[in-house]
Amino acid sequence: QVQLGESGGGLVQPGGSLRFSCAASGSISSINDMVWFRQAPGKEREFVRRTTSGGSTNYAESVNGRFTISRDNAKNTVYLQMNSLKPEDTAVYYCNAEIRPIGSIVYSYWGQGTQVTVSS
Image (cartoon, rainbow, N blue to C red):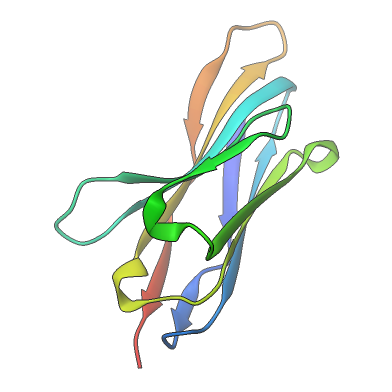
């Protein structure tokens, strides 16, 4: 069974930094896009950053220049480095990945979500 496990997050002051990781585990044949989303209280889930299997990335304008996504294909892991955090970055952050389990088709998997609170 394929799973995504997130780690990181927590409470940070404005201007601070945090780093997340999201590791895929199980019987995996391949992983396509790995994406970070977030959902603030009372708002819909929104896209943050994406990395493709080939290493291309794209991002939401709200995090341009502050959040960096990286990927370790050997470890089936994606990272989100968040710098210059603002109170409006407060949200639950979710990892999503398009994964092909061995002997199966591609499915979309979600991590459990991790809370980030930016506050002084």
